[in-house]
Length: 111
Image (cartoon, rainbow, N blue to C red; front, side, top):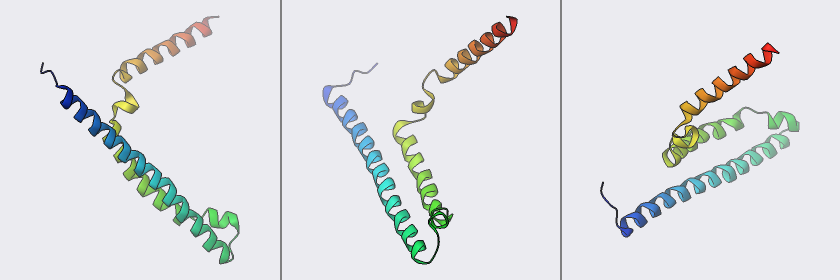
């Protein structure tokens, strides 16, 4: 196995930190910009005579959140990978969890 030098290790860690910073900036922009657009659209609809609930429930608002959110989700998978959600032993842990639940259910029905 190849041993990494201190500079290589530092460069890899710095690259990971930069990717993480990029994701958090993307997340902040997503929240701030979509909130501003959402607020402006609600105000616009209110000035056009809609009630607050009509303005808030206007389906056009949610398209931006949804589609940009899909892009943000892809960015998150690129940065964190699927291991962040499922972990290395996710499947094995789930199998054990379901087996334990089944065992508890069987034991509670015997009483």
